[in-house]
Length: 200
Image: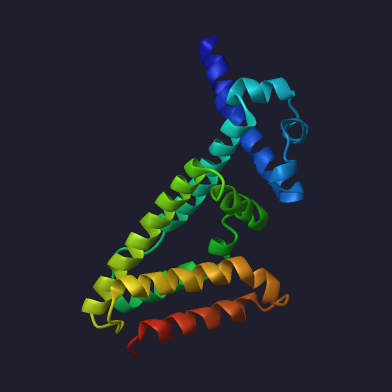
């Protein structure tokens, strides 16, 4: 009996988090009440409280879920191979449809806004970006030593690459016309290559 209950929770909790995500996308974080999430998930609100205890706990579970999505994306970034190919794979991944669509725009912005008010959320977001930054710094050092890029400061190059990529991801929706996404990605990759002083 207990085994079936655990299995039920393992199946229902992800479904509830998915419903929470969908409500945030549709109505924004501030309007994502437990009642609305319950209606979206097709369950009673008391079941959500049973599984998560509070909306705040559910928020942290969803934050972890979204951050895990990005952590999984980071793991797809190239680690080995010929330096030129590794660089091109890195840039192609950062400016790909898969990367842009990893998480909903409104959900990510909601969490970034929440991080300004919640130290625990901020710590988790910082931890994720810390891993990303360390990865990029390591790659900048390796690629610089291989003569593939020409930068004086790998740390600064990693910061520039993060700023270029994140700025592109968050704001392209405001200035990219329909049907021009692929061209935008090509332009961003070219800009990154120039910033990094890529050898031809």
